[in-house]
Amino acid sequence: MTAAHGRRFEGKVAVVTGGSRGIGAAVATRLAAEGAAVVIGYRGNQQAADELVRSLVAEGGRAMALRADVADPEQTGTLIDRAVAEFGQLDVLASCAGIEHFDALQDITPADFDRVFAVNTRGQLFAVQHAAAHMGVGGRIVLTSSVSASRAVFHHTLYAASKAAVESMVLNLSAELGRRGITINAIAPGGTATDMAAEHGAGYQHPQLRDTMPMEQWLAVHGALGRLAQPEEVAAGYAFLAGDDAAYITGRTLPLDGGFF
Image (tube, rainbow, N blue to C red):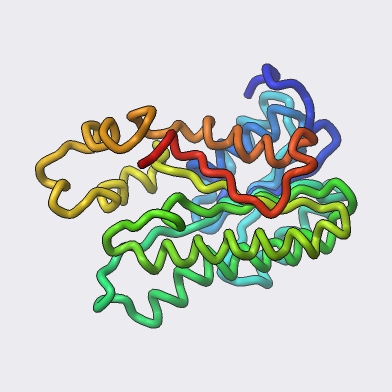
């Protein structure tokens, strides 16, 4: 953790869902480094969540980890209520929890639909509902979409649809929340060097290229910067939208994709 970015979140309290690993962990680390008290929501990886908390506290931050499956709105509500009970307020929600899914049309089942939308879409909607109930003027909500919401990828329809719905939610909720002085935006990450990318990244390649073009070469061809993002680079976008410099930005989705084309 570093103070190089200043202390713009001093006195603020943030909840980060999906905060035990990947982009979520980088977001929690960035917000804590800039002074926020951070509540890390996690579903299953308690060890990673606890280790992150220990690291943030050792660096002088305030942090705690709470288990909550965002697919269950009641658990999300409990997470946010406990965060407010512990730290007295809620200023920032960074909704980073999500799951991937690849399947051909004929293989998608109703259970797949329910599972993906329960986490990626419904989970984020009710996280907003619970968080906004505790926020006042200056509240910041940042959800997570994906470049897949605006780019055709083979066998990615279900996941992409769940993320496109998030962008629509952000746009429409901005009018409602704006009356209360709360902004809501989303980040649409591209390929990022996380465990999820290591497991599913090849799925973003055209099927005819997967066996003939190494991933590094494919990235060089299809990205202006020619590489995966580091989680810390994506976290900078969440921190920007959660900060005062983005006070007049709402209802928007910011692509962080390294010029993916």
